[in-house]
Length: 113
Image (cartoon, rainbow, N blue to C red; front, side, top):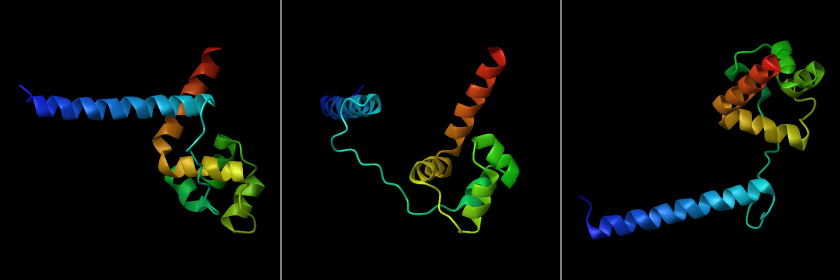
């Protein structure tokens, strides 16, 4: 059985989590972007990202819709990916499992339709 103090602490924590979840949902819907900042890295290590997926350059390009020449240039640091690509590649770095799940669902839906 929880003490009154433990219940109070859990209630406060739950309220904070609920508030954060609602703020995140508002942000995702575009309703409230105040206080949220997207941090975009200046550069990305495309070779490490690609190796984390265990893909060759052509496979990586085909799977994620990048031009093969762009991936090659990024690896050789001749060019940096555009801002939107750096954001996406950052997601690849920090949440590769989420990327795999999202794309797996998409491929499955494409097969079913």
